[in-house]
Image (cartoon, rainbow, N blue to C red):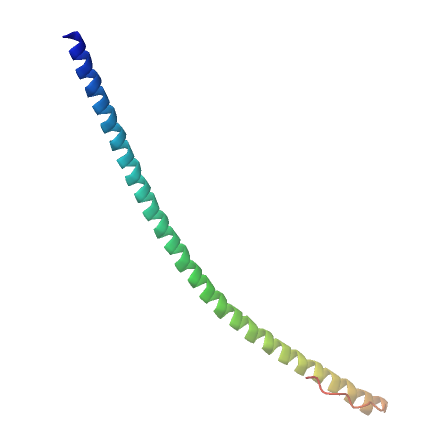
Length: 105
């Protein structure tokens, strides 16, 4: 009778151990699935944010390029005006012969 009880307890212990192992694996799989879902969601948010940043950078770059072009044009006009005034001053006030200068392009 003692051997039979020992075998019954041993078999029951094995069954409980196997059930616990399977339950633990399912719990880990569920946790991994939840984590993977959160990770996928975070990656999608990052992709969306990067698209917005790229669009903003494109608009900013265009605005910067336009502003730089306007500054270049204004600078050339300003330099040209300074040269014209200086040439005029040298000719009229000092009687100097000032050679024609080429236009800036």
